[in-house]
Image (cartoon, rainbow, N blue to C red; front, side, top):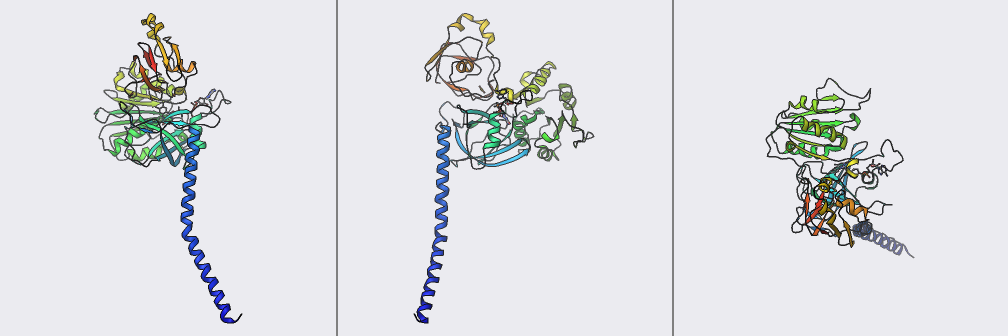
Length: 427
Ligand SMILES: Cc1cc2nc3c(=O)[nH]c(=O)nc-3n(C[C@H](O)[C@H](O)[C@H](O)COP(=O)(O)OP(=O)(O)OC[C@H]3O[C@@H](n4cnc5c(N)ncnc54)[C@H](O)[C@@H]3O)c2cc1C
Ligand code: FES
């Protein structure tokens, strides 16, 4: 081979190498795109299998919800707020704009937790002001085992969200619901009372007051154990800065010695919040109360407020926390004494399970269904969240107290409804 041929072959080799490299760099995005698509398909299929999805549908006639059933969302951001409280920002997979919501409303979630045979449903309040058509935000506290039962499993839903759900994972979410909402037209001073993680719906209300420049006198009172658990502390301090209509007060019930705590700051108090301290702060009078916290706080504050002369119309409240997911005594015990003969007669027929139960007047429809092995999703069990709503195919029902959620036409809120005839439920 002479020199010219050697140069020819080396030159050809270099040209081929350059061409190959160009081809690879052209193909790379295509290969990556196909791989991402495959991964997304895989994850969607996996979710489909795991969740046995209820088909996602839009609002149906007679429904007050923006969409019925569950809509698929992707977790886009996870923000640690404290050691055991985390915010989750979720975006709908379908890419459609999100409906707005009323400050104070909540979302329903349906999880299939590994090892659990049934789907787990939980509610979480929207924790910021409405206005973002792309994403919703919730903030969730991890619930540990009860201190007196350390061997009991920790909270299922909250642990699942904290430990098993990562960015890019899919979640099944029902549309914003609930009537624990800010009345923007009410001119009366507002008193927001939050206990621990019960701050979430109230923060949405406070942010709304700030972003919409509502010039209404507001007292924002947050009771927490200590500074370490004081979620959104800096955010709220920033929100109220330079707003003379907003008055912040914080109660630390379990502040430990040595923890940074400035008792000279009039906004910070030690000990438990009670009605006397509430009145000292607000001065009493014609006020609208919005109260959300764990059941012990609610039962300490709400009846005492009513005893002090505050009308129940002026108190809007929402209870959540571990106890709110357990069974509450039925509201129907009065019914048993009023019309015992009829109660014995009413039958509850569960259409899809093909079971008929006699109404006993002392359990909720939800409890009776559960006793018979019929599954109905539930969460608050007190007419607050709408999770237990099912279609009422035949018959009539009543509510002793107006439930705190809007109920779709022709549906029944099984945790608080009372039959007033034989009924057929589509369950
Ligand atoms: C309208 C509404 C809005 C809400 N908004 C929020 C919100 O914004 N943020 C938020 O963090 N929460 C919110 N909640 C509360 C939330 O829905 C859940 O109730 C909460 O996260 C606890 O659920 P979990 O599944 O973690 O606990 P669960 O599994 O329900 O357990 C509750 C407790 O029971 C204990 N337990 C479980 N099994 C046993 C057993 N066998 N023996 C003894 N003890 C047991 C657990 O250890 C835990 O302490 C809201 C609730 C409602 C109704
Ligand atoms: S379980 Fe919440 S309304 Fe019935």
